[in-house]
Image (cartoon, rainbow, N blue to C red; front, side):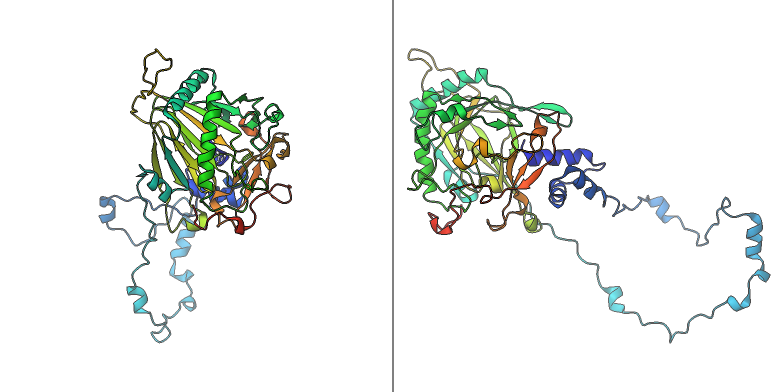
Length: 461
């Protein structure tokens, strides 16, 4: 779960009445991400619209008396007698009824005019399955590449990761005053070099933080992963040369080639159809703005879901639609620049899945054993200008998390990114709530594309 979903859940738990996610997100934006202020903002208009009291048919048909009743508990008998005596009423206090000439004319059209029609909601489209690479590229900022690795390498890498997953852990974090656990196994690997030079000291110095705690020194790429990574890099760079470059995207080395190098990999193992991960966007703490992430799928087929986050100023014109992409064994999904800013993704649970039968056995003379596991390896490029030592820390002394302002995006011109405290994920759910807007130039980050003239293509992804 990412930081935005956690904030929504925390605000929702403090409200006496349920509110929509859009209303909670708008309140968080108005309150600059402060949970208590957002809660007060939402509670201030809870009683603004009262529901009409329900009336059954029998009560509605019963005639009502036009005389007002005076409660006996509030009016004494003596005061009632005084009020009813004719002598107590002075004739001078009687007013003559207004003449017909003094009455203002009534606009008959105002009486006959029909009430305003209710606001028409934009249509909500059902989920769409994108079963081909062409459909994926048409509807999302992603590309799908089938049979990306040689079949024998894909099987060897699958067996290697299945064996390694026996030592993997489930992520844990604090939510609603209790510790929750991710419904899948995960691990983290780094390349021996950062992808830009041959200095292997980078691997030992890579002290990265995740979910509010340090990960320690990650494991290096296994030989099979290193072999696959070189193929993935070639496919990713070929695609990036065809696409638009964004201003805050990594500008590359002086010669501009290669554009993208994978130096870390987050790996996940989903055992069976029930293990999953909810909708989220990846943290940009070390990736920086507009990252490119290459996700390799091995093993049983699972659905990959994408859902756009509609900006606040467009919610009255359109609704978000969910896209489901079936990911077979040995397929590569590239989430291109702008995907993490515009979309959230998930691996939803499935009631039934097909068993995966590898093409090659684990050993030369062995037998092929079916599996219900899916291995996912997300190759990422941790930018040199977002190294661990450059990440600002909050008042808790913990490196802050970087996330985009997804609800107020506007074609790069007013896009904002937030550094926010993430200590509460581990510190018994408590943090300092400190946040600030990221300033690329002020923080000395770069090089990044910056100038639109460096774009490789004019077409938006």
